[in-house]
Image 1 (cartoon, rainbow over the protein chains, first blue to last red):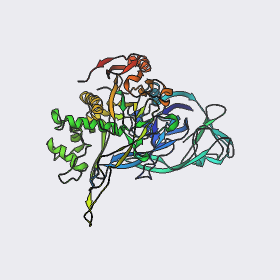
Image 2: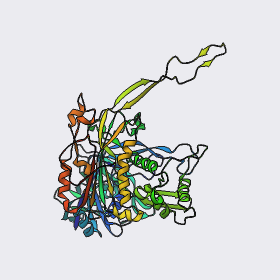
Image 3: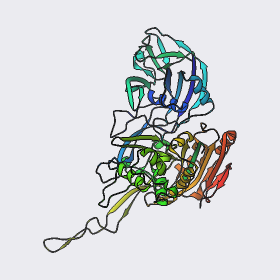
Image 4: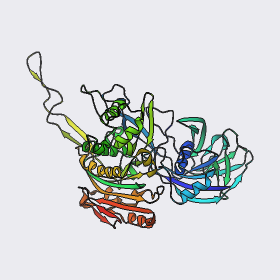
Length: 234
Length: 318
């Protein structure tokens, strides 16, 4: 399959967890829906339609910082209050960097725009003040893999937990799990489904035994772009 | 108008323009002690812009286009106006109180909605518009150490009272204040301007010019003891021929001299005359993308020393 590879980096990112209201906590890395929204922004679409497969590798260790911001207060929302501002704590991902692997219906157009340094709309890491400018890396032929259950793989991207039969600890690695990440954006601030993700906190490869064929409701694919490591698209 | 990018560099002396309430109102430190840089939120810089426009055009200016929606306004008895009243106040002045299309009428009358976008949700009326202009956070171009200082106030916290025995009771001295302060720092902030979104909001070239003026002068006018003395140093506006193209990360192409060791040492720079801005990286990246650039203009503080030369048109603000 043809695979488009591009990098995202920024000084800050904020991928807000939907279950936080008063305090805005963030996911530790870019979510599926944010990434799809970012690709849609590049292409000038309201949202990404059709078939899309993407994988995310962490280029920098996950690090966050909490900042208290002065958001518009309840008075601003039209309720009785005496203060203009409402202190709100926001958790920010510091110096996020991701290598994105994409294939799907928009491959050619996306390749063309990234190669020329173009984007239709703004591109940012989850929140508008976290500006990012995608950088084209590769457009290459990748080999699709169909691992048998129990096959050991070394993956350079984050992986949906339902693709993993067994995690294998390696020297210096520290695996983390993110639960309840939105799976699909339906428009008008509506979402469908959640997915749980396994990641390595400093971006090292994840070593694991595969579960085998993909589950159809939240499918995933593995492909190889070099002999040593694979990427997981979902 | 064209898509483009803005790079804004400013300095502050003896104060912290944007503080972190979670850290005893010290400077915002996102990158940790080892990195040492401090930051200013985009929100604080947009406030400088809005306040300048509000002060300059209290009547909305020519054609009543430059009202500011996001502002603090109170009733006579001190209650804050909410979104609906603030919007209706503007629509009343521009004779659109019975507006059936609040979004369009507010976009036409308010500078900040056209430029920064808005989320408006009042009852059944709601709209959400991304702004054509997005600011990033400003980060210092060097590690910066803040100082914890104390002082005294001549006034005590409480008034003298006379007790039952007829004797005066009260404090014998004023209160003590404590604060963090920053001797000197230089910050860079990036911004992007998107012509495609500008078409949706009605933002035009005049708005870009006012935004740039407000960035520069709004920074100069935002003087307060706690915020320190702020000075705009360099503002560059790069416009592209292609509405979709961006160079990106312009702030990464400027560096400040002296380097890191001087800022973490015993005698870090404490004023503008002790630093130099190296713009040779900026010069190079702009030259590399020359064919895609429609226009470059920039403004420089007269006291700023620069190494490298900037291409484009040098401008002055009155």
